[in-house]
Image 1: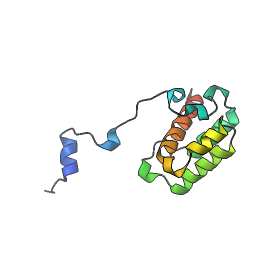
Image 2 (image 1 turned 45 degrees about the vertical axis):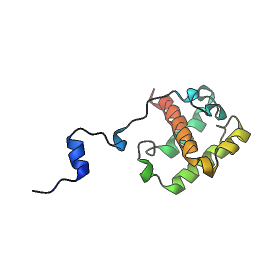
Image 3 (image 1 turned 180 degrees about the vertical axis):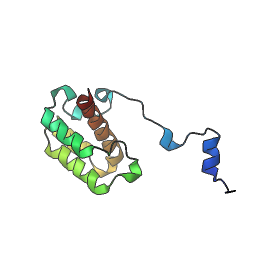
Image 4 (image 1 turned 135 degrees about the horizontal axis):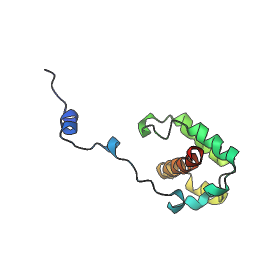
Length: 119
């Protein structure tokens, strides 16, 4: 009989792991700094689809699985796109000292864009 790890014992006991946690589906427009982006209902289809395609598969990946090159490409695509409403505000927000919040906000934006594809 194999010895169980503490993680396996905890899972059997019904403990929740950080990876089991799902963020509540918060409407994008209510998030802090959402005003930096063009409202979803004003995004041209081709611009929205370009970003959704680029991020396809990443939204469901664990943060540890995200490739730094892919993240850099996403930020580059956003900066070069027509999706930023406040370019000066975005430039101040999307800096390395704020990378975690910027990634979270962009992923939420793309998630919201993706809802239009599935509806």
